[in-house]
Length: 178
Image (tube, rainbow, N blue to C red; front, side, top):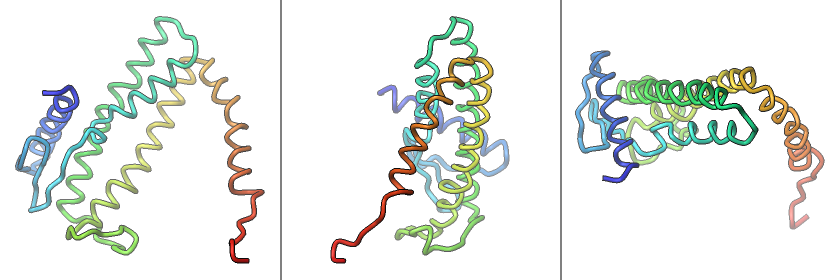
């Protein structure tokens, strides 16, 4: 079994454990598919939180730090994101399989899958906004732990702002025919 599949399998087992704890009994349809109320949810590598952990630790690795700062940064980032990601998956599965958000299918871009709107709103809107909020809190903690990281972020901000202005502010969108 590849490391990727092992990580996915571990996440599936933890999600199932947590769903059972909350009395939302799931069925494991296959090694990475959780079924509830006839709605299947496939857990893929993107559902494990590994990418967010890697990005945040990569940012920390971009500036000089002490050994102590590296260890504390790892402890701030990895367990926090991993545990919150399990909770995020549990929320999305419950919201989807209980059909909490069956609103605006035209916005959700509903495919042939009935009930997809609840999945869309739970995963792509609510969970993503909460994840952004949590990542900002984690970044704040990292800035406190590693002041040089904060300085680096402050130095980068004007570059991103200038790029944003160039792309969206000063440029005029002209139709090719006109």
